[in-house]
Length: 176
Image (cartoon, rainbow, N blue to C red):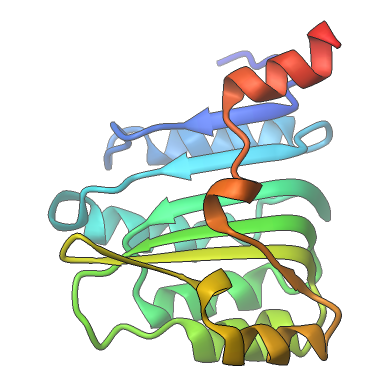
């Protein structure tokens, strides 16, 4: 399969499945030289929970060494996030967005964020939106945690304020 190696923005929407994940990993690996923006959206918790695990456990080792924007819209288990963060610990991410569609209320990803992102100063801007049974909690609204991130020079922003959609990217990159 041939790829355009000059891809800078890659959006992988809902519709990911077990049949195409290997192709997606090959695509990311083949375009990572120019890849600056990566969005992975697999929101359906019940259908994609195992798939999200596969994505997180394999994505860290194929990302470029520096990426401008990484947006992960997944159902995240803490142990899978830890694997991703360990595998990507040499990668600097300027803007990291995580939309965690939790399957269980007890799934807390913050300890992993603190250990592998905050303490190692691997991101400049961070936005995390936790979704559980229709309720949304944005890290930006948690004042006590905001202060903690400031100590590590990480700017926490509103998830929707940091979000860049493909149309905005095209307008900003090619039309202005």
